Length: 252
Ligand SMILES: Cc1cc2nc3c(=O)[nH]c(=O)nc-3n(C[C@H](O)[C@H](O)[C@H](O)COP(=O)(O)OP(=O)(O)OC[C@H]3O[C@@H](n4cnc5c(N)ncnc54)[C@H](O)[C@@H]3O)c2cc1C
Image 1: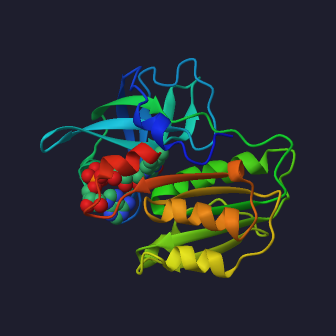
Image 2: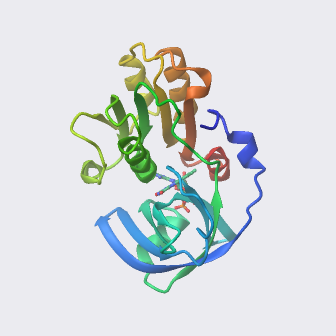
Image 3: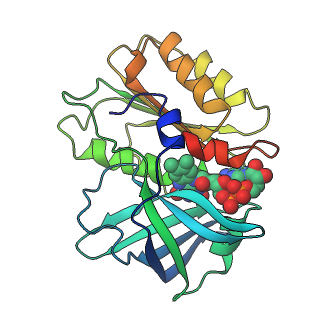
């Protein structure tokens, strides 16, 4: 597993292996959550897939190329396919996703370090996310489900901004504990997680939330839940308005 703060290494990571990916299908899960299927144009050729795998997609922005990271859903190198689930808001990538049709193309490059479940496995998982990281959380849950320790306790805190986000397809088991926390006060998610602290040494943490809260949640997991320094992965998935969005992306 890569260390908790992958910030600086990713900031300088070169974007290599650009491929042209093509939309092959569009599915509206809710009004604000769209799943697009892609032909990979060779993006996955020779790649080992891993949970939370992501790609940088390049959109036509108002002032030039607009690159943003997105999680690959069901990446299949043999078939040369993957999907992306867009949590729609007011942004260039979101707008593109809302109007995309089969045949539309983007350039794409695999980004981010390889993420693997620890061996031996964790004693449990503490996971924090939101609609933008739902695909990553699901890929993590699937990896846990097929691991040697599929039955360890899993707690998931999901921040939500819209009521219909409760219906999003979170791939949980009956024994997983899920709590939905409304977005509002930026500290609400951090405080809610801190308020439920218990001694969780031996657990692993994964955080994919707004860029300010991600490191704060990671601190809470280390300090209040007693997770090891290297046992928490925290990624800023997006940034509130007014924050340089490229900075948030760099943390991923
Ligand atoms: C590793 C990684 C994987 C990711 N995977 C996914 C994924 O699978 N699906 C997904 O939907 N997103 C994912 N994201 C988040 C996505 O990259 C960002 O939300 C990105 O900012 C969207 O780009 P945009 O062009 O739509 O908006 P931008 O141009 O970046 O931002 C426009 C405005 O919208 C605001 N904004 C940005 N994102 C959000 C948001 N989620 N909610 C509310 N306001 C927002 C910004 O503050 C800004 O004011 C991922 C991020 C990382 C780092």
